[in-house]
Image 1 (cartoon, rainbow, N blue to C red):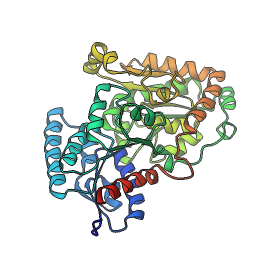
Image 2: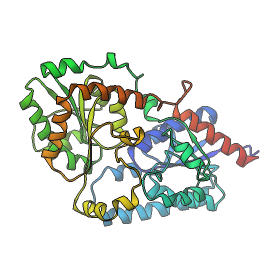
Image 3: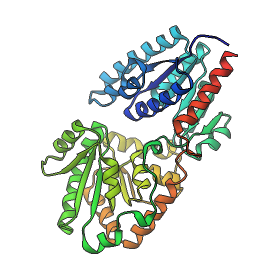
Image 4: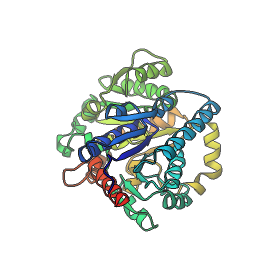
Length: 389
């Protein structure tokens, strides 16, 4: 075996990947105290001790024209590929973001560096022919959804379910009886409604106006209802106010878990956050607004590319429609409000859905009181051991 400390190259392009990768770095540091970590690192990875060659998470949070972004990412890919060729890391760990990471995985394989993909590319959802790329460019996939391990293994890809990293930091799940009283809210109108427009600027721009109008309609119907927007930071708070065009909104930053722990109902932009909503047993309507170009593309090619019956993560995991999903949603506020009111009026649906959501998310945390990061670190350590012997 080589005696020098290992070099681990990681790549994350968005805030969620930065967060997951930072947890993995901490877990690996406990195994390899002298290891060198570097790569495409956001602020959380850097704080965990990863040398940042580029911070792509900052670019992901900015609004720019598609051509400007394309030029930027092309240069970024070239710079990171060059770094991989020069460094010859002991292992490359791409985290989510396959559009970026396939290019880097190719460079890693070319210099003999094993690739351990964390947060599996969702080839099971769309464009299934990409499984060939997974086989060619990865040595192991750390899956964060229970069904993914069998899916990849059946197609010749080494894969392990490690647990969902979101649940490494969430509080322990409550029983249905410990959640906010749905019957009392339904009877008195003292609703607590969580509004989650998304974290990216584009999501906020598309969703905030309709969610603000939905909150106003809820308060007209139930004057004692409280509707609270969640934002990831102060900048997102201002974006919500700007795009909603009003200053009277109740918005909190960095308190999503607190808001969800008190909520009876939620309206949420599609994404991982819907698993947090489900974990807290909050019935919801999920939406994802698309523009005209996406609308045309979906109508022409959608069902040829997308292979899941449902499009929201909650319903995909369930294998059936647990909650309404407006996906794709073209911006009809009447459609959204009708879905919200129909759900909030139906106490039977509310209570049944709460139980279904709690049951759905119960298996997602890593088993045996471990974390997804620790389980993934075990795989990385094993791969590095095989490479060095």
